[in-house]
Image (tube, rainbow, N blue to C red; front, top):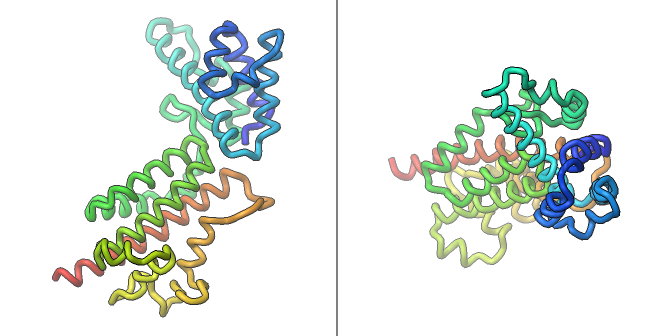
Length: 275
């Protein structure tokens, strides 16, 4: 969630100077028309900030707050960059707005490639797993899982934690189902009503894709590693101590590591059957 000071500084700096008509346009675009009300522009801006902070636990409203400040920041970055082509005196965003730049960093944000993004430390980057995943998804024409994964990564990059988490779950589920359909046939897998039992088919291959000897799958008690992995992608209730960015980043990298390994096993299995 964006801090109150960052929201206030950005909206006051970039939105309040605009005309009331333009503020209304933004309000309509982000479904804030019933929030952006008041007798002055400053009152309208304060009501928007208060609304965002009051609903900070609501993922959809948190996404809206990020999208709004992202649009305002990105437009200003673009304006400064274009202006620098004609006026050497024009400063960078960091030099022009040092306080906002500092507050962005404190909230884990950065301007990367002229665009506002959440900045994930390079120490947790795992490019190799991503490369393996994309190569194998393309190789086996798993276009639906690929689409969900790309969307999850894009949402994560743009700070849309709830949307990223949702797409990660859909990616994993569609990937496992398409693997099973590729092996057993679409008719057979779709005849199995339980999603749990559809996944269980991947523990029956030889060699197994979900290896029961490594405690990866348990059809009965659902205590295997893959069972637990799937449950971790579907937590319920609040989780004190977990920030949105930390939890979503953990899920993203967990999904990349696990599915990269499973895809490699699937690839080896297919090779043994076609050799």
